[in-house]
Image 1 (cartoon, rainbow, N blue to C red):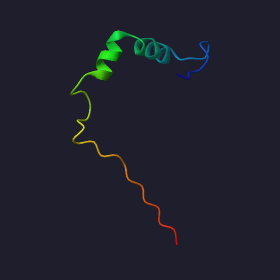
Image 2 (tube, rainbow, N blue to C red):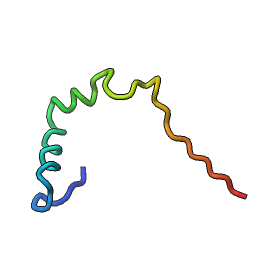
Image 3 (cartoon, rainbow, N blue to C red):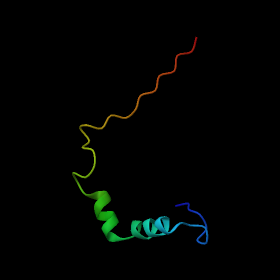
Length: 51
């Protein structure tokens, strides 16, 4: 993970970084049913036409 140096890091970024290393964060990220269900996920499609 890349972040600002500790002396330049905002407090919110410090707290988020600390939270991401906790078991609670892992449980939320791996929880089934959280976020967009896979059946509704559609990755963006980009089309470039060259002539």
